[in-house]
Amino acid sequence: MKTGAGTYRGIVHLREVGAEPEADDPHETEMDFVHEDQARDAARVLANKLLKEQDS
Image (tube, rainbow, N blue to C red; front, side, top):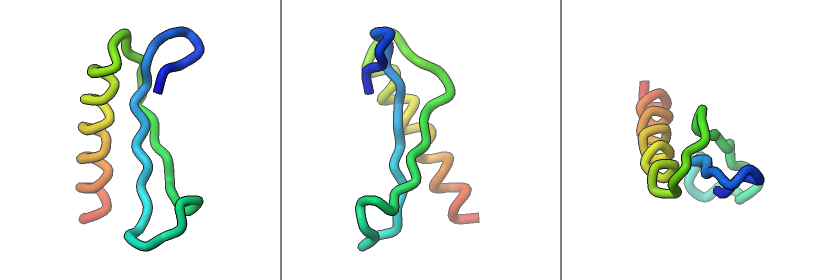
């Protein structure tokens, strides 16, 4: 997502399969990035971390 400051932030939305779209639990990366691909990569890392935490 592009921020108002012109930087990018990765956002991950988690919800159960079959859940309503409003049931998501959005998580943002801790920092903003200059390039969109950096924010996308950080969001992937965050998503993997969150999924691993759910499994444990």
